[in-house]
Image 1 (tube, rainbow, N blue to C red):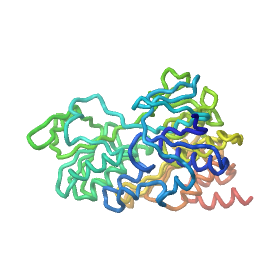
Image 2 (cartoon, rainbow, N blue to C red):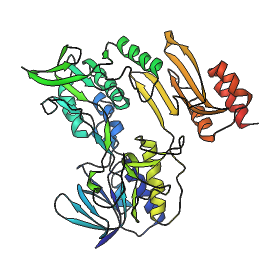
Image 3 (cartoon, one colour):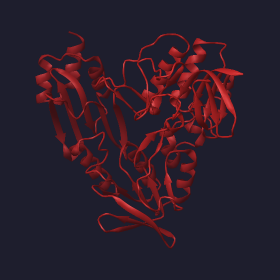
Image 4 (cartoon, helix red, strand yellow):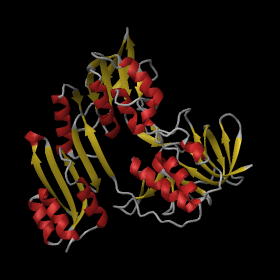
Length: 414
């Protein structure tokens, strides 16, 4: 028996898609296949489990008991091994098969291990699943020595939780600054200073060469020649899309599964959404993987509308991140690093950890990053997404980027 809509994955894209399908098709059968024996949950909430602010159930995307049953959505544990698009069927790890009418691949991403020895030792964890969180919680106590490998977006979310548990934390980042894909050199090094002022040790331009057991501790060998002892090593060195299982199916892949503006893959009746999908980028008009939850949710919604026959075109995702690093808020939007032929403007208050950079293409704001500011974040995003022509306000912002609210009012009410 064929299921009308099968969704592989159980994250934000999958849940948004299933609910949107049900809103538009009251009778079609819907199954979500989860690779974990957990209710659908948000990975971004896992650090809050480590801080004790929420329990495991607090990570669940839908907290009302019976939510999916009430919508006649089946959530089933099952790992997909392969896809036969000609037969419109999936082979699961237990050997069973599921036939589908329409398929959505929303399998997200998985952590990437750097090519070093010792990552299989006890005491080495990713912070990607609820099982990971349980393992970290057992080892991350007050006074424990922890090495965090990676200070990107995910690493900076994790470090706050580890520091909050009273651990002695050393952060090792291969690039020359923290959050290098989100912050320029000025802002990334301000984040580093902030963390060090909070009692953390942050080693940038440093790599881990390998791990070994040293009695009850892990010995973390650095390329500087130094060695750090650790009770726990947390690996946060990047992720890659979960797409290996579609190999040989005819579904085209690159960094992720390639989709069109209707979220459909190269194969009819097969769609993709979220961190595994290579979708339209608003800023560049190219195709990119944007591994952020708002993009995943919107991908899922748009894919679902097309799956039920309601033509909906995706306008592209804006590359955006908002991060809280031990109390220091940072954000970046669009092409914050600037564009060829464009101009950038900065204003810096290093003593108070405040920084703003704006990037322009002509008189249009195309990117921005901020540090130590929570005001006007929505305004910055709005100006970028609306492609508002700022006219004389572009020159005024070049002189003083802090006048962004005035520019917004002038640009949207003229």
